[in-house]
Length: 577
Ligand SMILES: Nc1nc2c(ncn2[C@@H]2O[C@H](COP(=O)(O)OP(=O)(O)OP(=O)(O)O)[C@@H](O)[C@H]2O)c(=O)[nH]1
Ligand SMILES: [Mg+2]
Image 1: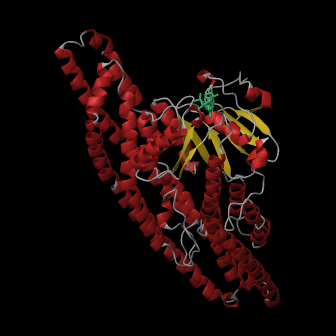
Image 2: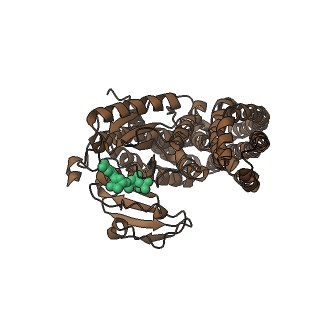
Image 3: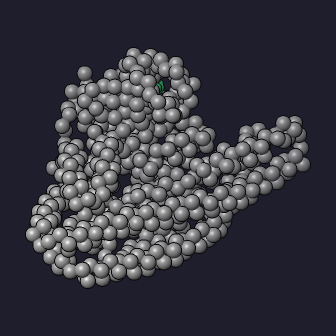
């Protein structure tokens, strides 16, 4: 069987620490949790960080037209015909496949309930109990070479907005790259894929081009098609694909795809380092500062402690004020972003007027096409107009952080999903930052756009019947033109209206997150000061013992820190290849 071609334990290059990095990272948590508990500090945040690191996976969605060969490719990667490739689109269901030592499969319903599946259920597509929006989860030992990837086999991509929403909104935030599968017989990108490309580009999501079914065409043709598609992707998305590979699932020629997955697994290391190790290092920095205080002799003085506490209160009050001002300023950016969006929608949708008109003329509802274009325009506007404002906001808060509190927020520039922030020596706000960044990372396109769906449907649905009978008449055509023009204007206005509350909601959530985090650190610091106070009354020998225990624990933490820093450095070392 061909699984023998990619044995477990493969490592791409010397700089790839492989799956072991995750295990090595996790190994430090029990000791750290014990130390935090010993000094009556919060352990829940460490439990959460460990759980997040444990379940860390990145998705690799396979998208493409119906029957482009997505499922066959995934079967080939697995080394067995696990998923049925009968052409029955009505039973199409998404499948997520990840590594585990032992095979397991389950149907997962939208409410989270699971039903175990047998291999044969998948092979024969016996998914009778297939609730709408359910999906399949498979654990498979053949993926040992890519333990941090979840391959997503998605149903063939039609042209509807709803599909875009499901595929891009649901997965983009947790995806590493999208695999675009195009059959060699297709020869060109379908329009729905062209739009997907534009949107993925706006989200700065890389793609891998897989030309499938190359056995169907002569080698020279295949090369020509590959060349054409490569150019088109670079042109449409503004950057070249991460990789472009030729495959034939039928002939089991999938080596180039396996190599592309290797490169993704390597990228997953970097994302693990940025998303898990760096925030944990920041959290560790905070714990170290608390233990530093507990270890110090000079706090055996009540007056000093009192002064410390008062200074902290003053700094916190000042920060709260600054937070309010900065948040208000960020909110003030919503209106200009809306103005830009309105103009961009009117220009961008207006440029497509003839296309929508001819769709309407031929009796097809142009609403879908219009909304797909609008999605891309909204994504582009948010990236160029709103994201920089968020970055400024995060930067200003970082500047304003109380000197005394070991609060770690992310590098403002890490707000984008692709950015990898290095933990710097200065207190960057990583722990809170990655949470904040996630909030702003995923733009609420689905929510904005879907509100307009029924409106447009009604708009074009109502008079279509009547229109079609008179379509030959110039007057009716004119009326239709007016209608399309009005639909564009109405859509632009409605989408702009939808955007406001969505951005506002996000800003409010960010502000709340900052408040909670500050409060958390304030409470931690208060606990430390209380312990120091109690120590004043406990006699010198007990105080000395407590200081000694804090010193020993701080030294132990320094060891854990160096180990994590080494893991971080290994994962983010630039690949010489
Ligand atoms: N000649 C040839 N046919 C292939 C190849 N890969 C898949 N096919 C055929 O193409 C058809 C569709 O393959 P699938 O793998 O189901 O394609 P898909 O993209 O998953 O299809 P949907 O999920 O329905 O969108 C099947 O009849 C396959 O046997 C290939 O490499 N060469
Ligand atoms: Mg399929």
